[in-house]
Amino acid sequence: MVRKTQIEVVDDAPRPLVALGNDYPDGHVIPPHRHRRGQLLSSLTGTLLVTTPTGTWVMPPQRGMWIPPNTFHDVRVMGAVRMQSLYVEPEATLGLPDCCQVVGISPFMRSLIFEALDLPVLYDLEGRAGTLMSLIQHEMRRLPLLPLSLPLPIRPELAERCRAFLRQPHAHDAIEKWCTALGMSRRSFTRLFRQETGLSFVAWRQQACLVAALPRLAAGESVTAVAMAMGYDNPAAFTTMFKRSLGASPRSYLPQA
Image (cartoon, rainbow, N blue to C red; front, side):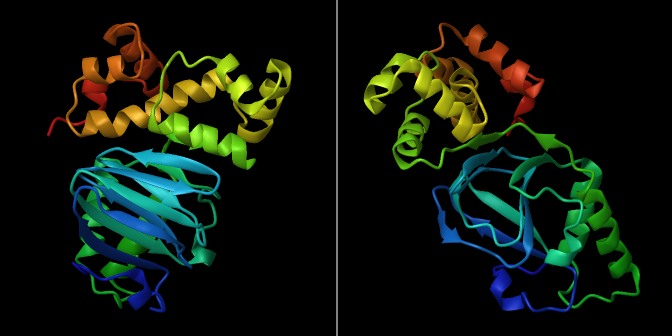
């Protein structure tokens, strides 16, 4: 496995796909940067929070994160992460999302990634290694997209308000409070919010609570503690929202460490 090597060191390798592994401790922050290649992140443990100028994405354990080429982003690590990264040449990204996406990683895909990490950077394009990397590229286009993104507005004052909410989310935060803080009528605020985020305020608020809850749940906090901290009336109400969004309860969605 190629470890503790940054993509910049091998970026010019004449290969469509490069696999690298790096370990990061809890709390580590990778400052804003961009890659010439597209990047598929994955990890068995820990949670990643990826932020771009237009949104925030949370990657729970055993899921993946697709970051298109030249996307300006930073990464925050919550819980120790043994990160696996697949870097894809821009011309080989046809059929992959054109924006950041959290994706499901099947057991088969994870096996392929582990195999890729054992290959040298300059693997044989015509042999087994080349076939393996070609198969990975096909499988990447079949990864299911997961609803773990949170779009952020472009307008600075509204974006700052959204970021403040993400730091202290509350399931019943009133739209009137936002209108007052921004000096806008409810009608103007509602129209602007949907225009800037593509979501209604209520839908965005719920998604923000979900995005904020996942790292805390993955870190071992109880469902009850997270639900209460976010203003839900009871854990059952939080669990219902979680199941409606992700198709499973918090306990079954997150792997047991």
